[in-house]
Length: 295
Image 1 (spheres, rainbow, N blue to C red):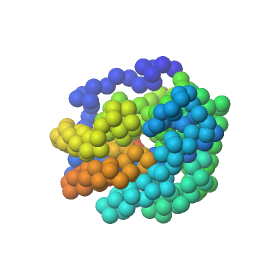
Image 2 (image 1 turned 135 degrees about the horizontal axis):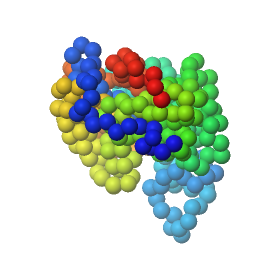
Image 3 (image 1 turned 135 degrees about the vertical axis):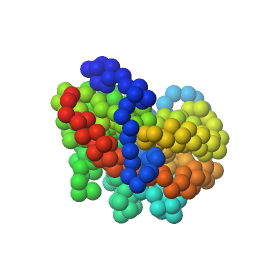
Image 4 (image 1 turned 90 degrees about the vertical axis):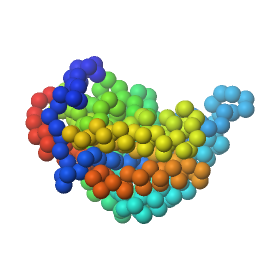
């Protein structure tokens, strides 16, 4: 199914208004991506180019660069989120639950939502069996949390032509890969529809810090500008904003404060809600009760 067959074009200006409870204006959700990088494979991203070129294995410098995030950076982020009383969403590889069990336990104890993020940090177009990878991820989260995940984020937002179909068939209710709107939208599949929750490539530390090579303050400035505009846009109909971070990027000492600063700025607004993905989903379906009736 082509992307244009999965979702009809819909200008946001012509939709019926979406209203949040208690006069709230918009929703912000923050997603913390926790991954396991296999030392026996080429690293998903690199900070240091090998001196002789190629893709050496083991790639100790780049593996360790990422490992710092789960050993140290995550715990800095956790302290900020705790202090502000924000429940984040943990987008986690199925294999990372055991590899970094204290991280998973910390998120679970705080009532964070767990979102599937591939069984390993591998492009979904390269996994040997996509359907099995999706099922294994759900099973790992269910075994740890006591309930299956409702949401999915592909590693690197990667999908095949069949990913939405396979997600629905594995029991997922929403996906985040389709970064094309400021409100939830509905995707067709070969069975029942699935909801896409607004995610972000713009307020995402991978894009800013690793691809565009900005200084840490860019995360705060860009997110603040994005928030201000979405807040204005939401005067008549609610908007959803995502803040995406990885512990090995925004959790390092010279960047963490900019993540804290944007959360503090938004938290000061009494008419902005911090929700999880499943809270956004349930609210949207209550607003649009017919959303899943046709495919």
